[in-house]
Image 1 (tube, rainbow, N blue to C red):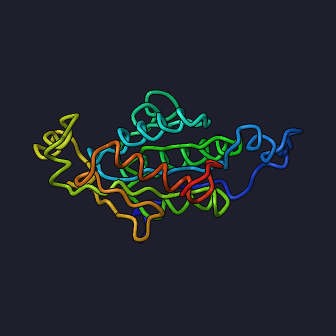
Image 2: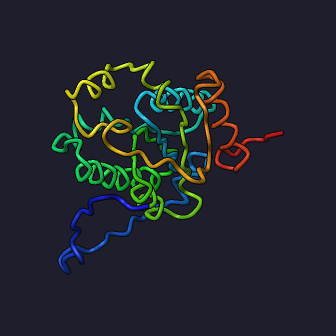
Length: 214
């Protein structure tokens, strides 16, 4: 499944732009932090609990002495992506930029959490392909649409149903759910604490936290 729009990219980088190699390596940054850097890409409908669960996970990582950073969809649109709207083309560009920023954080040796609807499979795949195979984990916050509408923490579903908001994911814009997510979380059946614990446990058993796990 692909996105309905494509962003036109420059075919090549100017010869005047040369990649600068840092003296400090990615491995040295990671070793200093005592962890294996990774991008946790939270995806799900609005109201599914992406930001809430991601915040809970970051809090748990902090208590474990791990270095992390959370990139939240709304927060990023206040700065880096404030020039973008919510049509399909702008959403694709929104995700592309975040993927590039997240890649830099991973290179710094951090565990990065991103909370974005990111509705298109192809866009999430594009971000995955920016990183090494073990540096990207897709976290599907799987919450039924009717539950998200009941929660409606920002009143967005009500506005979308009344026509005040257009291109709203799940209403008049599609959401392509992950087919085989790395971590599958169901917030309708579990508490936020349980969901966060599930994710942190997966990080531990997969060797990202350098912890002894039974």
